[in-house]
Length: 191
Image (cartoon, rainbow, N blue to C red):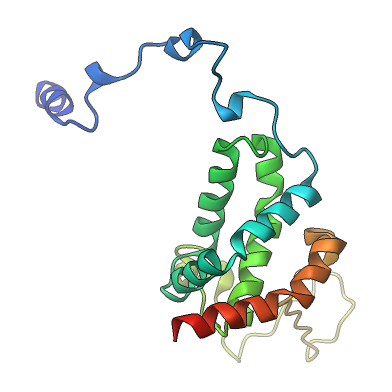
């Protein structure tokens, strides 16, 4: 069986171990021409990087395509991953800043979906199968762990707009003022 496995690995073009880079090969590249991610990043501040990201993805042609992609059911976390990874490979920010930008980027995508009238967007793949997102039956009484509410009181917190703590005050004001008209303009062009 091991012999059969080795033959399939060698024959498969996608996983041919003989075509893999040599260990340390990346260290032999010329220091005069480094990749974009090997240079200092363009942005080191999360708020400035998010402002630039907002400007880029809300350009009319890109926004129109983004709305179509969200409407087609592509998960928002996957869209955010692609957008942020592209910015990283272009040298706009380092991996640490990229990770900090995940939450505000997803909030921005949620705002775009909401303003476009897309209510059934997919937040992440497998969201429907996740037991944490299932709504319990009506006959189940919520458990009050800290004892501060009565059993028949059920507090429901629904956030549809991003908060200042996650997006930043200047970007939040731009989202509230500019984004609805940009999304309306982008959706009118596709009809």
